[in-house]
Length: 135
Length: 350
Image (tube, rainbow over all chains, first blue to last red; front, side, top):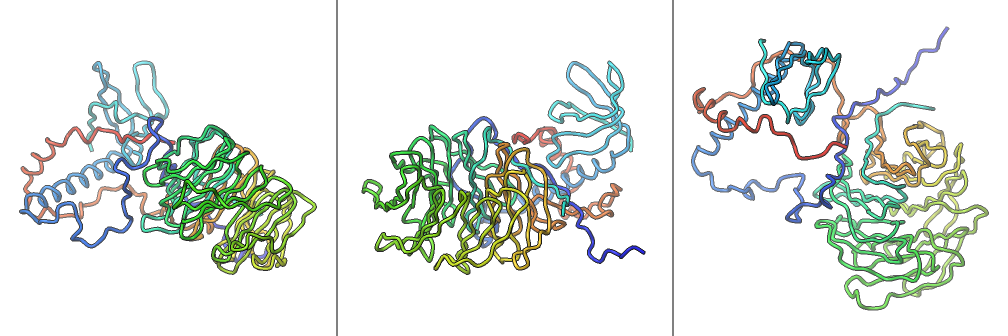
């Protein structure tokens, strides 16, 4: 009879991303030589301390709402056929899989290219001009 | 016991990583500096491994690197016969301290006013950082090159290791208080102020001594030659790494081997716990640093537990209402900002 395991084996935790490496262009360090504090100080020490009009906060709300809509649109795209437009009038279609945290790369499958179907691929978002899909 | 975990691999160095050090915990988090034979020590955010900057200036392999407590200053020891002090916020070089041979080790006092150096010329040097032009105080006595030198007992004493001895010196009188002799080469030394514990590695042994009296406390044997070991801040665990490329985690009280990890592609030269004990960093001949979780399974830094429900990908209603913004206004703002949707971030992926 097997002795039941009393201590569960820890499951490796996935990582959000790899640590950022050197940019290859500079020696780094903050441009103005200051570090961003982890915990923001008292609210009075903000860049725009004066609550000047609802204009700025309205824009912030709108930005937040748009960002959230965009993220939801990405979620909706999962497992759907998406058409991508590239430079020189190139169009390809693929099944959308996922995006990375910075929306720098899209993971797709069954990518239909002029030279054949690629089972899996990473599309560089900075090269995409536009994309459409039907939810 | 072989286990699995996903380490964070920090790339960027092009030669072996021979030393690393964490800062204390600052309002900006904590930081990690790595010394590398490529001559370009790097500063990283301690909990993520993200590169912050590279200290440029040394003309040879950097053998030792350290940060002061609040990570405002860094010091490095190099094969170009100099130690350098840097501004760790801007990356600027503050001081170059000329030596007569390869410098291997540097350490700040708690108040960052003095820098201790040691190297192949067998001399310990104490520099007053407020008087950079003044000659350093020198302590002689070692009969082989100094590998590591550390302040201890609230900077009243100095611990130094050469090939076969560890010596304790009194700062005020600059004289030797006590020494330990070893049959094998001492590979590393770590000082734990809370509890005045000294961690020494030699051969396959990981030994713990009192930093005050140098009396032995306990020691463990590892399966392979160990190059570096570190004691957890709460003294529950210790980690060690060496010539078999593996990292070992032991229970400090019982000596039981708890976990071991493969991952590096070369011998491990240095291992250190972070100041909060949540992770430990290893530097290797393979040119990488890796960050490992102390307790596998926690969400911390870049490690994120993902619960099964979070992966459904179903469309959910947006949670934020649009208090004063109409749809038309949203569209207007959207069209102004449409370029930003397709822009990519400037960081280069590791």
